[in-house]
Image (cartoon, rainbow, N blue to C red; front, side, top):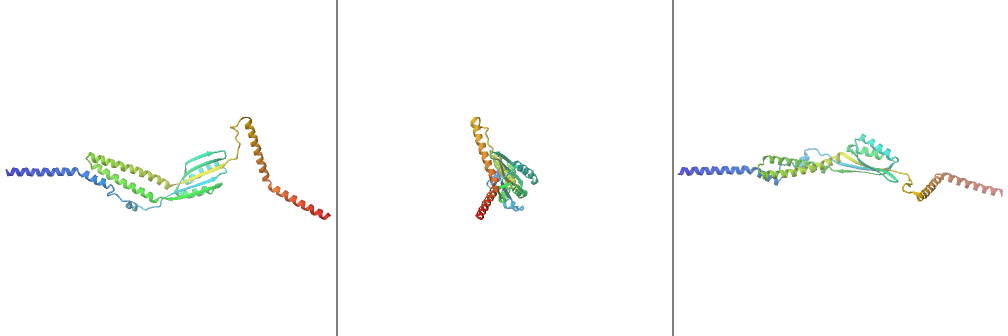
Length: 278
């Protein structure tokens, strides 16, 4: 009887031990995920370590612009287009507008940052009449490397979640890990987009060009018909003729001054001659 009781006790102890092992084994992933979920940055590379691992170079964004008047806007436009390939530059966007008094081009040029200064100076130095020029340099070194570090940290976090996902067996753990994994991947895509845009701004500088040609005044009677239009046209022709007359007189001002001097000297000489004859 005692032996039978002893055997029963031993079996109960072994069964309890196996049950405890199974519970512990099934809780390994859940406990590990819970700890990792509470501190997602655990065991990830710190920003300082990632930054110090490589040499930091200064990152700047260069932006400039030139506004000028052109004698022949189409010729200047062709010259600018022919100049760009020498600097590996290109036109990002352009716009042409025309009114009764001017034709204007607005052009945005992108050029490698190493060639920005040379192209900018070449354009500004060969304009007919410069109205305005400006240039700006923005230091984005801190933002550039901060984005790189954050992307690396998110990628390391993504790898950790993927390792946990391979180990997980409980449906609850799998769903929770996949949810966090999707959030991390969304963050990576957003940060990568910001980094790509910033890198493009750093690698390619921007030059805004705005140039125009002043057109001569031309009376347009196309919208006016009949007798009234002809009267207005005649008035305009008379006014234009008067303006041309004034311009003609203005261009003759040296001869007017010379004539006045000659008349003055002639009268002075006549007075002297009259005094001598008296």
